[in-house]
Length: 224
Image 1 (spheres, rainbow, N blue to C red):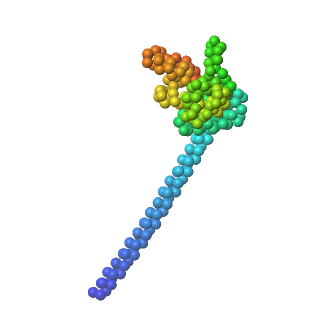
Image 2: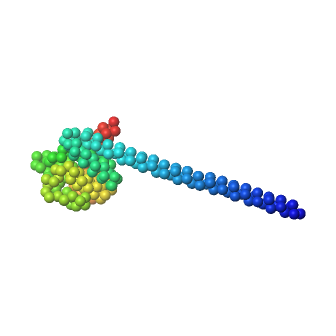
Image 3: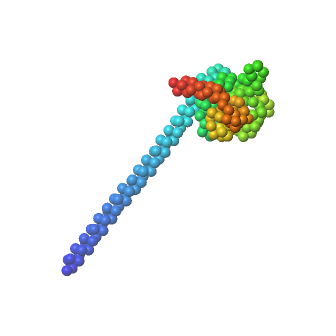
């Protein structure tokens, strides 16, 4: 009887030790799995970060190449570097394709920061600089991008012209929620476009079509 009890006690001890041993091994494996999962997550985060940095760098390079294609020597390297920075920031902040902005600039001024717009009659239209924006329109949006305009001559500064002109175009895109309408308004003015939309008259799409042609040209040259 005493021997049976001792055997039971011994068996119980052995079982308990075995259970503790198995539990310890399971816990150890579980901890290793947690550590491995954490390492996988950290590695994935690093990969995603590198991929994002790579995409940002690629966008930056494409913008700079686009400026080279679009403006050539009409802009200095220093000006191109500044405009690349500004266009990159705008594209990230406002989720707009920077090549579209370059296409507008190419059609408006061929990348000439000193361009002055003119009517068919030869009289000056008042459109100035890279994005051929008028001083009155520029004044309305300059403050929204932290730009102070002292005179129309400020619009011959490529950086100022880009920031103000892009802000104006973005405002039109937000108003119409339609790229074609926004570009038409950029060309003919809000009043003219609103009048045609209200009356149901045919829209003047020539400007929009030309900008899209410039866009396609730039994309082909940039990505070749």
